[in-house]
Image 1 (cartoon, rainbow, N blue to C red):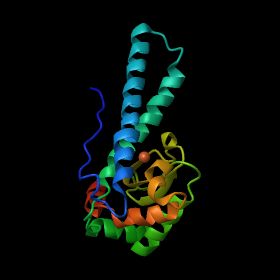
Image 2 (cartoon, helix red, strand yellow; image 1 turned 180 degrees about the vertical axis):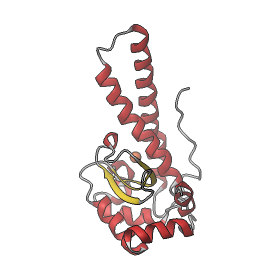
Image 3 (cartoon, rainbow, N blue to C red; image 1 turned 90 degrees about the vertical axis):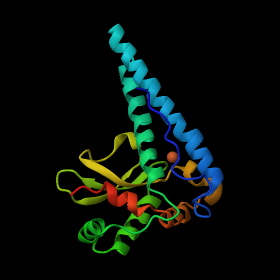
Image 4 (cartoon, protein in one colour; image 1 turned 30 degrees about the horizontal axis):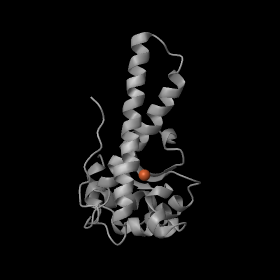
Length: 194
Ligand SMILES: [Fe+2]
């Protein structure tokens, strides 16, 4: 089954003024679509390699599958992580945040600082460790190399320039601040596992 570009769960302009419509159109319709097409192509090439027993380009296509696959699935989470009316963290998520970071404000300050400090393109993520169940903030500077394996992303903030450059230019901090205004806490809370 080929991967498909998910439909945006809200109108392109519904996150205004924090995230502008033009950025949302380009980001979803062009950038995310490129990841979907890249992942489908890599998977087709790997299937072809298995069929032919020719693995001469396997390193290239595995890298393509990781790069485009990470891009596709992280963007799927990113769209759902945002909403014009995202509510508040559930009591369970609030407890997990307080337990790990001390307070919600300390978590937010840490999350914003980590996102602003990503070198070049990447993501800042709130993740849950599937072994310990504890929360962690991680950054993925090359998203194909997520830095801890046994984690589930709960909250993903895209800090590639294509996510903010039209409206915020080089001011990534202002974009992250805007992102925090449209976090869909109902969605983030749903992703937490007990
Ligand atoms: Fe993106």
